[in-house]
Length: 227
Image 1: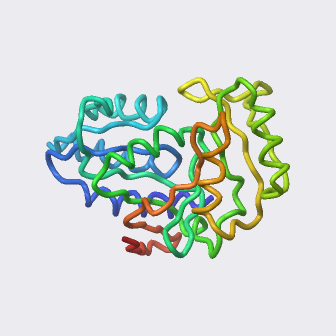
Image 2: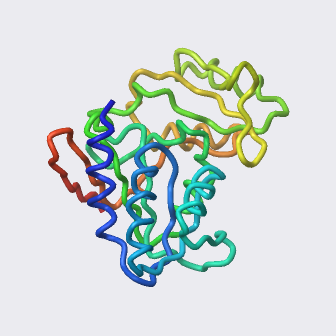
């Protein structure tokens, strides 16, 4: 669903990438289309270096013939292009549905500009319909879960699983998917969660997105500037 809209956003965003750039490359289904478009331009002579935010993105980019680097090799990235699970009216984000939120946030923070590509279904008035991923160390994750529940800030928490087993991130952490329905103050919630021992990172990206490129099924692309 919305595959054409995702592709429309990805094709548009490819035009924002210039020869010689070092860019961060996010994760997810919309970024898949971005990699395909970038691969075509690399074949035509575009020279770029990308820092992938997940093992899956690295694999796809390598197969496409795109030059890879790791974050430690580059002091600054020109921009990062990534997807999102929700985008509110102020450009605050929920990310991490694919499990790569820690790397995604680190790469975004190292970039001069963060551009979000998504289909129109990701635009929301208020964050919270999509469960918020919270990355935690496996040791004592149940205590983290209970701390969040006792604070009364969310309805339900699920330990993320894949194929019946606990989902493990690229950095050997696990993820608690926290259901809120509505997040009234994303910034305050982000601070609260980070104060809990055992929390590594949250899927709240606060004041990080500079621009969103939104694709629609009818072929339209909307560009929204935030900061």
